[in-house]
Image (cartoon, rainbow, N blue to C red):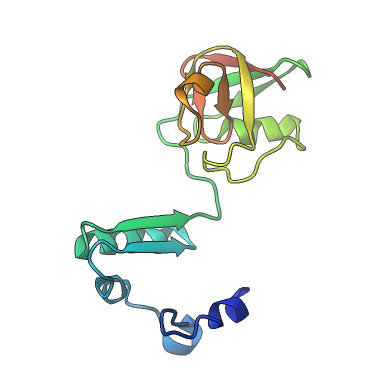
Length: 165
């Protein structure tokens, strides 16, 4: 619990620390059912836990919202293999059906910039020189999507892309 000292400063009763190793696993359904109607629920942690929180929240409180932070990239869904040509370096890399363009690019350019791997921070944004992009991010505007992509989430709609790397 890296932020325990900071969290414990909230002594007004709004925060409860419940370590599983001392109290056993939390009953997620009971926990989220106690939230006020329309409440926002924040979660982070392993994917199965976040999925349980999301399902329990919407079952108990359909007008609520769930905000989450993952510590791993989202899985690629419905991916097709394609190639990415890195124009500045002259390298070409194959992107597998279940991997991100970022993961493939990192095989040949390990120092390429990235952060969230979830399509919302923009650190991995690159200019697309040719090819058509299947945008899977939540950050870029329509005008940015005309000539850019986030390599952590977006993919090619065809056989190849050329990017400015």
